[in-house]
Image 1 (cartoon, one colour):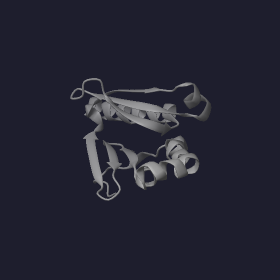
Image 2: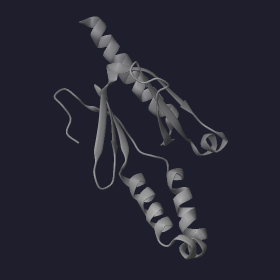
Image 3: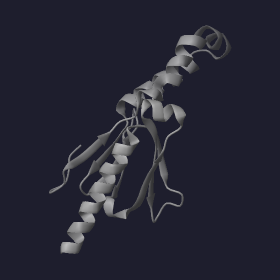
Image 4: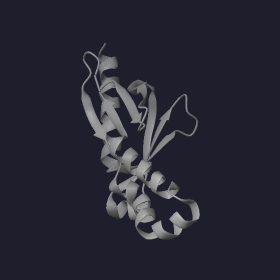
Length: 143
């Protein structure tokens, strides 16, 4: 990913390994029964989920927030950091124990925010984004 002039990487965020537990469970435990019922679809689905786990990422720079997803066709959605109004996260019981959760990013344009599930170390990710937002606001105030 090529960054713009004066732009530097703040955080590169990948999904937690728990994101592939269910697809692997489908392959390991259900293969014979599912294969008889629906053919190769469960294997294809699980393979797709695992490949997406390996390729999807969120990238935070000092100026922008990018989400890169896709396997066969890469889709990159980006927004300037100064459009983000709030960042939150939630963690269930298992998420607290294994340190993963769902990250919510709120902007003026999105009612209810956009969520990204199975994010590793969500508290650190939230803090990184908030620090980058704070730096932008400080720079704007100094101008």
